Image (cartoon, rainbow, N blue to C red):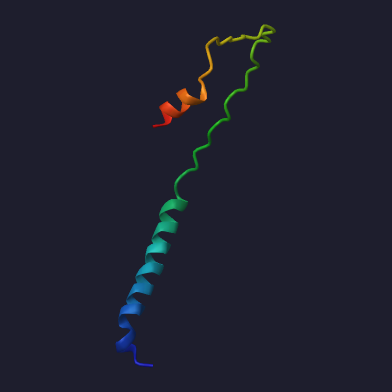
Length: 69
């Protein structure tokens, strides 16, 4: 195997391995930040339900067709 022909691939592979090693060591030394879970609170028991009534006329087929154009 001729090493001169494959020097670019060897260089890129060595660079990738070196970068991965440095990154692994750099991130391994940082402390993991722990986040406390949010406190769960119970909503007040509201027994009344809000009712919304909508009044209005329905569109006819001709009015719906006019809106679609």
